Length: 490
Image (cartoon, rainbow, N blue to C red; front, side):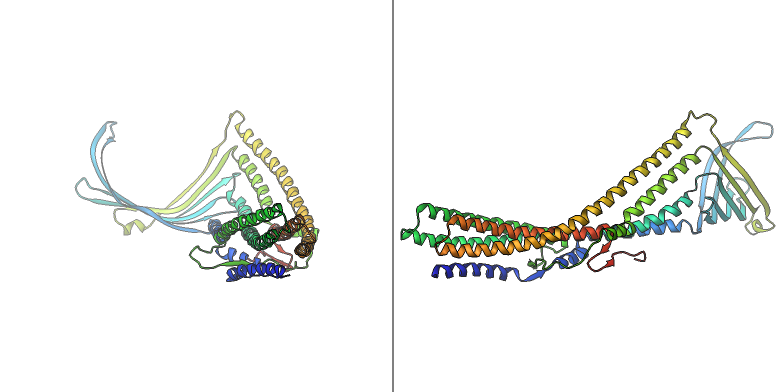
C-alpha cells in the first residue's frame, strides 16, 4: 500500500511541476488565431496585397477622368552648318545659330463609349535667330485647338476594362478575406502541432515518473526474491525508454514553440512562455450542403474569377478581329497666329481646320489575320471547358468537405470516450499490478493504449477544427455564428 501511494505521489508531483512551469501564459485556439491575424507575416502580406490592388483600381478609375497636362521645352540652343536651297536651285551652306522653346497646356478626356479621345490645347512656340543684323524673336501661338481622335471599328480597350476591372477589384477584396481565413488555417495547424508536443511531453513526463517508481518497487521485490532478474531488467528498459522519450518530447516542444512563436509574430526577445489550452466540447451547429454550396457560389472570389476569365477570352477575340484592318478619324479645329512679338501673336488669330481618315488594310497577309482570330476563338472555347471543369471540381470539394466534417464531428466524440475508457483501464491495471494481480505485459499494453487514445483524441480535434476553418475559407461564411465573413461594402 505504501508503494501505491508513493507511486501516485510521484506522478502527481511530476504533473504539478510541469503545469507550474507552463502556466505563465495560457492561450486558446482563438487566441492563437487572433495573434496570427494581427502579427503574422502572412496576414501583413495579405493586407499589403489588398492595398496594392486598391491603388491599381484607383489607377483604372483615373483613366476615365480628364487629365490636364503642361509640357514643353525650355529655351534650347543649336548651331548647325546647314545647306539651304536657293531660288535658282543651288545650295548655299551657311552657319545657323538658333534658340527655341515651346509650351503646351492640354486638357484630354478619353471616351469610354467609343474608345476615342477629345482634347483642348493651347500652345506657344518661340524661335530666335542669333546670326544676322540682330537678334530677332518669332512667336507662333495656338490660342485654342480642339482635337478628336477616334478609331473606327477598332478595339476599344476602355470599354472592356469597364467590364473587367471592377470584377478584378471585387475579386481582390474577397481574396483578402480568404487569405485571412487561410491564416486561421495555418495558425490552427501550428496550434495543434504545439499542443501535440505539449501533451506528448506531459505523457512522457507522467510515464517517466510511473516507470521510475515501478522500477524502484521491482528492485525492492527483487532484493527479497519475489520477482525474477528478467522482470527487473524489463522495468529498467522501460525506465530508460521513458527517460529518452522525455528528452525527445522536450526537443519537439521547443521546435513547435519556435515555429508557433514565429508564425504568430512573437519575437524571440519576448519572455512569454505559452501553455495552450485544448478545445473543450464542440459547439453545436449544422452545415447543410445546399447552404454551403449557395454561399460558396455567392461569396467566393473563384466564381468572380471564372466570370472575369470568360470576359477576358471574349476581349481577346475582339482584339484579334479588330487587328484585320485599322481605320482612324482625326479632326481638329482651332485658331493660331504668328508674330515677331508676344502680344501680337494673340491678336486676330487665324482659323485652322484639319480632318483626315487613315486606313490600314492588308491585301495579302497569307492568313495571319485569320490565324490570330481562330486562335483567339479556340482559346475562348478552351477557357469555357476549363472553367466548367473547375466549377465542378470546386463544388465536389465543398460536397466532400461537408461530408468529412460530419464524420470528424462524430470521430471527436468517439475519440473522447476512447480516451476516457483507456485512461480508466490503465488506472485499473496499474492498481491490479501493484496488488500483484496483473503482469508487466498487461501494464505496458494498458499504458500504450492510454497514450495512443489521448493522441487520437487530439488528432480528432485537429481534423474537426481544420475542416471548419477550411469551410469558412471556401464559403466565406461563419456557420458557427451564422454570419457572412464578407459583404460588398467591406
